[in-house]
Image 1 (cartoon, rainbow, N blue to C red):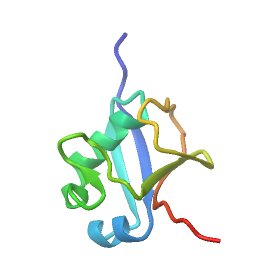
Image 2 (tube, helix red, strand yellow):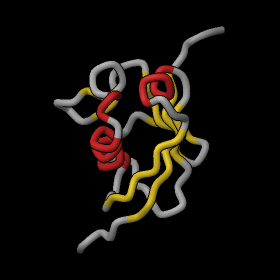
Image 3 (tube, one colour):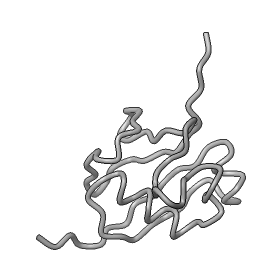
Image 4 (cartoon, rainbow, N blue to C red):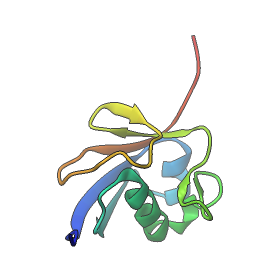
Length: 95
């Protein structure tokens, strides 16, 4: 099955936004999972390589999490569908 390219908007908060120089990145890519989107995000914004996304793994560094449709996740196998709301934020502990 071939996956067609879809436009995804990723909202960035904190350090990811500072590194990218913007709060939103739009990506046109054929993705099925959050892992696919993370790799596409790295291609679209190489400034995130290292501090936010491990360039060798193509996945988030510790301390960062995606929020997909109001659910926090660090699972690269999380499925995406057109219209998914995706945010990239720092995971913070607190009390």
